[in-house]
Amino acid sequence: MSFMPHTIEEQAAAMREDWPSFGYRFDVKRDQAVWLGPVTPHNRTYLIEVAYGIDQVLEGPSVRVISPRLTRLPGNAEGSLPHVYNRDRDPVLCLFDPAGAQWTGWRLISKTTVPWAIDWLTCYEFWLMTGVWDGGGRHPPSSGRMFTAENPT
Amino acid sequence: MNFMRPTGINPFLDPTDRYLAEIAFTVQLPPSLHAKADGRYAATRRHLEASAFFADGIEHFYPQGSMAIDATISTRGTDDEYDIDIIAQLSARYRRLGPLEVLKALEDALADYPVQEVIRQTRCVTLVYGDRMHLDISPGFRDVGTDERCSHIMHAKGPSRSDDDHEVPTNAYGFAEWYKARTPVELAVQEAFRRKWEDHLQVQADADVDEVPDQTPFVVKNMATLALQLLKRFRNIRYEWLGRKGRMAPSVLLAYYAARSATPGQTLTDALLNLCALIIRDIETASTLDRKLSVRNPTHYDDVFTDRWPDSVQQQNEFAADLRMLVEAIKTLRSERTDPIEIPGILKRLFGDYVVTDSIRRMAKATGSSIQGATQSYTKKGGLLVPAVVAATPALATPKIISPVAATRHGFYGDPIE
Image (cartoon, rainbow over all chains, first blue to last red; front, side):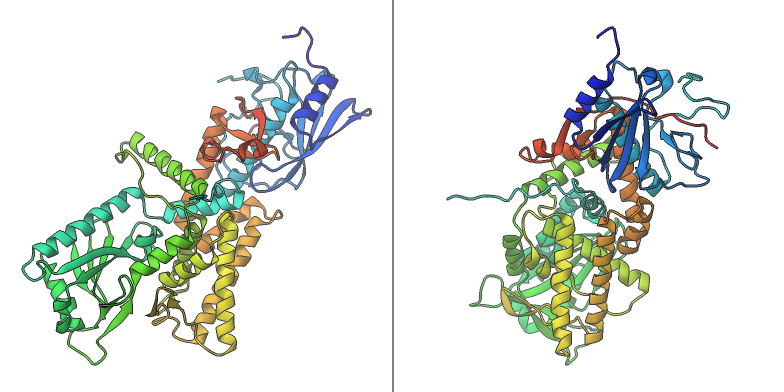
């Protein structure tokens, strides 16, 4: 493994190779590389945005579903929209456990974040149909914060 | 001889196909019960041949209807009752007894048979087993000098002889052969269902529920038959839910249309839509002429599949309306705009509550456990496939569909539950 994490250029090259249907631009205002593309995990086609800046080497890329709008199940045991950050305003998919060392900047977004987003969307579709999240994972306690490693399993 | 077997499409690959295939899997006769049914009708024949009355009097004892074409599903709106239809071809010497006496003789010979109940019906004698399997045995006579197994079966309501008692022309064997010739084995369908049953039986064995047979000799072999099973289930549920009285469109009629609309290589969804379209078209044509639908056995002109249904033009129009509803619902399922939250409700209205809930739960659990174990694969369009689907996908199609990106383990996290 290289001493340095993958550069944005390396991430962009891998994305082009693995997910050629994703478009790429560098958003200067946000200082982030942004990929936008369709995935069809099971039923529907979702347009997802993957954003990644060099300051996200530890916290990981942020993934949003641009369309269609995510459906919620109020009162569900897993929460009205499980396994996201910023649920009530601008949900960002939470694709890895920060306690698990699953993401690092030395891994490629095309081989982690994108397939993990497909996993999330697949679980989400079945969750809408059954009310049960079958993809595993855990929820932080109500006092939990984003990107901390509290209560590791 | 240059003989090409159609490869077909894995029915668990396309998302809409996958729901439908899971539902067909849930309602179809399990391989273990198929083997049990085979054993039961062989034992019944032995019992009859051991009786004084039918000694040396049984020429053939063979499955007819769904059992003969591997299309058996649970009975009417039930989830675990199966009707198995058998023709008992008797020696001509019994024919002079007349329909009612032949049925009564069969009933008498089976009176002490170790089943829960023996019931004489209008055209058969039904053996009711403890596990709710029904064996319907229709006594019949071969018509001498005619094509293979052209026969007559008995029709008599009883309890006394009546002017209405008569013999009904049939050639169940000929029809089954005709059906099988028009619905060839599609290897991808056969392989997908073989794996599906083996996985299912393995899970059951792990739970100490059942024994895993060495092999699963029976599986549905093509999309046409899967579509037929789904259509029969839909017909049953409509009758059940709407509390309709009278006869349903007979299974043999639906099988006739399934064979006619069969096109090897189509998706399950298309197979079902094409099957519906063909029936709707024929009913519309008949209704336009103010006639009842009339369909005959293609292997025996005198065998009329529509002899007891439809009762009226209105009844066939009612069925056509049901089929249009099915078509619209399938199109909604397939639509990109349909929110997954609507899917269970749509499917339950078509195929029944328990069967759909069970099918979707099974799909969800298989997918979830695959994600947790990182055994899934991805398609180039960003789709997710569980291992059993990938394994049963014909090798030629795989590089076109499957992405080289491999699954890796990860755990979902997020905000606390509100």
